[in-house]
Picture 1 (cartoon, helix red, strand yellow):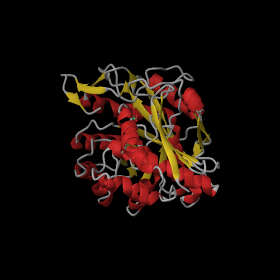
Picture 2: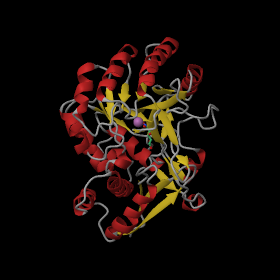
Picture 3: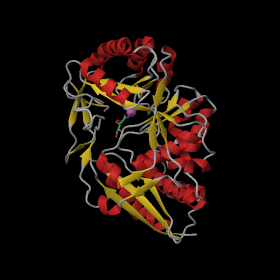
Picture 4: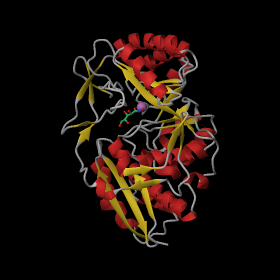
Amino acid sequence: MKISHADVLVTSPGRNFVTLRITTDDGVVGYGDATLNGRELAVAAYLSDHVVPLLTGRDPHRIEDTWQYLYRGAYWRRGPVTMAAIAAVDVALWDIKAKVAGLPLYQLLGGASRKGALAYGHASGFDLEALFDSIRAHLELGYRAIRIQTGVPGLDSVYGVSASTQIGKRYDYEPAQRSAVPSEEQWDTRAYLRHLPAVFEAVRNEFGPELPLLHDGHHRMTPIQAAKLGKALEPYDLFWLEDCTPAENQEALRLVRQHTTTPLAIGEIFNTAFDYQTLITEQLIDYVRSAVTHTGGITAMKKLFDFAALYQIKSGIHGPTDISPVGQAAALHLDLAIHNFGIQEYMRHSPETLEVFRTSYTFTDGLLHPGDTPGLGIEYDEALAEKFPYDPAYLPVNRLLDGTVHDW
Ligand code: EZ4
Ligand code: CO
């Protein structure tokens, strides 16, 4: 069996997605997600110009060899564009291998270790009333774990807070906005630190002690600020505090860790196991947040989770709507199979997206399951996808109140 050709498919059914489709000479088709929010066309070009021409004629079963060929063979290593492109090839090859075997992908990864993957959803509201409504709406949808993000007094727009309060329309938070240049948001860490503990207290008073609650700090704090927040949130028993610092400087997390027992999750913008080396070996975090799409695919993620497992660190795979249903399905096969599964982020895709990408994964009683269709369990409707051409969208840029650019 040989790879006969590969196609880079760009579509925008509500948001932009890049998909790699690999076809074998036997007519088997595999899909991989290559979506990098706000930089989509860079990955599409990397694939079309420098990867697709190398795939033709290769044996699709040689997944590890192809991964090493693309990673080491480029000479230039790591980085979000390169690792998203490698991820797309890797996931498409796993899809093909599992289809040839006639098995859902998780069976090739060791089989199911659990009934399903505990999912968390995104509840948000500028004020407590809107936040409580959003939490209730998520509980009604069946979520058994919930991330909460709220407005901060004095700031007009804040990461993680949905602009729409119309439940059933589009309640999940979608940060990328269609425009030729990014929008701008404001930030004030001291105002945020004063406000957030009271929000968690109110949520615990209303919803009780059992519901797992999560929060995303989105890289905005210094280590000492993050340590202070982690301590302040200890009474509210968070499942995790995510991305409390930018974390490029892994050693900075030592300071946070010395001050708080609030569990820490990091890594959605990382792209290799090396980005976690200090965090994992010194046990500075509790959950690995990488996306399959941005960290080199199934092959690299399996190694990363096995490394984390040696230190009792669990998975928390990144699953916002900018991960396509292909990337989400890949995450669910891993979630079901690995031993050190923690939780899976799950925001529903728009109805148009789910028409272009036909999925076989399910969400029942708070648990996601990848389904038992051979391969990943995703079909791509190319004719429909072509009706949604690429439309530029960017993540916002963040500024402090005095105008200084800050981490978003
Ligand atoms: O901001 O995926 O935990 N989830 C997140 C996401 C990210 C977006 C960026 O594209 O932080 O909302
Ligand atoms: Co995040």
